[in-house]
Amino acid sequence: MTERWENAEQIAAARARFIAAIPGWVQPHAFAVGRRSGGDVEFARIGTAAHRLPAVVLATVCGHSGGSASYLLDVAAFDRAIALIAPAERTPARSTRTCGRGAGSAPTWPTTTWW
Image (tube, rainbow, N blue to C red; front, side, top):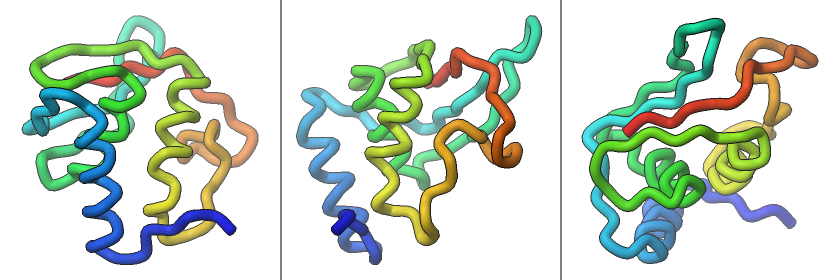
């Protein structure tokens, strides 16, 4: 059986476990996930302090504990972040490599996480 976090309390408990595993963790005021497109960066996801679970999951994958930084994520790292946060999804997980652009479409890698 796959683990599911089905309510706010379970999500908060999972977030607390991620935080406890990162010494010196400081919640960012904002964070983003972008992807390179030609010479530009397109931001696919931008989060604020209200989006606390995705921030700490990305920090877990990147090894980030606080401050401003950016990281290049390869496919394996991005897939790991998706797998770590998947129990919080309300619907069955979609393909980890479609980036919301439809099944079978390939994203532009690497992905950059901005803090």
